[in-house]
Image (cartoon, rainbow, N blue to C red):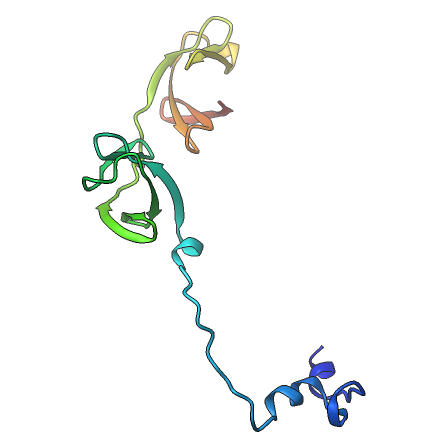
Length: 161
């Protein structure tokens, strides 16, 4: 492709020149930088929208964050960084909060029934009938899409919610 654009003569171009010569070897050519504002945060970080409640608060990943007065009822953009979140309203920064992702969420205790199931959030999940009577710990993962089942601290099974 490079040979085609730089060396091959083209009959359709003036002077039978390659296309690259037409554009870069012209004396009267103006090179102007592109005037564009690019918001790189949209490409590099996780962005979500939240509605500000009447108490000037938003809920983001099971945590509550305060917003300055005057924004209740509006939608704000939440940009998550490694250690903080930034709140934007119409591309204007309104607040920055420190943010720590809870690594070890609380585990819930369940007892395996005689037929090898546990009940979690109103649903039955099959573990193994051979483990009936044992106590297991259940923890949600992947933003509540899956659960991990532990037996004596050892991961036993991963189930879809």
